[in-house]
Length: 163
Image (tube, rainbow, N blue to C red):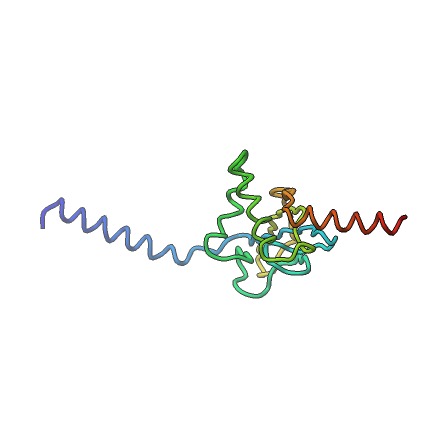
């Protein structure tokens, strides 16, 4: 074999061996998860990110216990787009409002929400540190036509009761 060929083979083996040993590198030093408490038209508070009736700040136990999210696939990149601003940011954050409102009746429409990323360090004994929370974005949803009609009905009823 020529020197060039030998060097190529050595280079290939060295890369393969190096990559193979990377499987023994430690896991992440922390876990993250997201929540988005939102205020609904009827006054209740829900987690719009996980689509739950209650907001749970605790680390998710079900599923993979690392870098967990209530949404899968391309939704996992959503928090990393938080820096978008202007029309792009409005489209991104407004989409959660539109999605929620399309799936719920007018009295359960979303008024506003806060999007948080939570993080806990993995301790040497395989426990977790106290949770740190970071507000990523606060968003006020644009009212839909149904919301406006619902508001008019509610305020009309209140005005009639006061008379």
